[in-house]
Amino acid sequence: MTASDETTREYQTTSPRGLDYTLPPMRLWRKAKKIGIWNPEDIDFSQDIEDWRKLSDVERDSLLHLTSLFQAGEESVTLDLLPLIQVIAAEGRLEEEMFLTAFLWEEAKHVELFRRFLDEVANDHSDLARFHGPNYRTIFYQELPRAMSRLTTDSSPAAQARASVTYNMIVEGVLAETGYFSYHATLARNGILPGMQQAVSHLKSDEARHLAYGVFLLSRLVAEGGDDLWRQIEERMAALLGPAIGVITDFFDAYDPMPFGLELEEFTEFATRQFQSRIQRIERARHQTLEEICQHVDAT
Image (cartoon, rainbow, N blue to C red):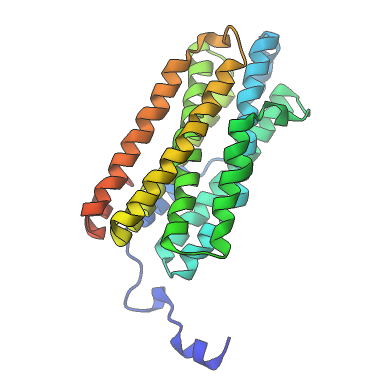
């Protein structure tokens, strides 16, 4: 660090600025500290092990299939989040960076949780990439790492928006949220795997905070970047929605009949409904100030 750097750098928390506790990321940070403190090692899988043994081969296969999509997905988002944190930090958005530290920590816990389920309940150490079809690979092997790694060389608002749409709106907002919905439908409706049911409730809570941040970030970018940036976000969402829905249909197409009485339409409709709701919330930011955005982001 040069002498010039030393004289120009300011530490926010020792300046008159302090921390802005009204910002959604700070509210999410406080929420993460209160309800995000759960340990994957504390989940009791004893009954899950017994339940697993009683399942049919096709039921076990379908749960392995679904778990494999989560396991690789959670590892991917853990690996790929750091460039966004670095960009936010470089812009001096301390409150957002603070929340993103919890965000990354929670994604890492999700990786541990699903691997623990595979090791202790399913007792499966095979190559589960066999369940990763073309649509899944398009998103997790190509689009997500490409959009996130681009931030290391391009920190523009457009690149940030592209990354957040891919990560928050598609991977978390369509796939993860619908996947948790599927898990709950499978396990709760059939009264099986209580440990995993408890874990999924934690995961859903974590992801709700992540999605709230994604909505805030994209709304802020739209408010700052105007209609041109909104069009880029809209185009990116439209381009990735097809393969995202394809991941869901590919899962159902793998089984005939589908185990556990699941119906494809229920889950595609859920995914589409959630997607449309968030698009509408982000679009409203075209005509809002940052203060108005902060008031309407669900970060209580």
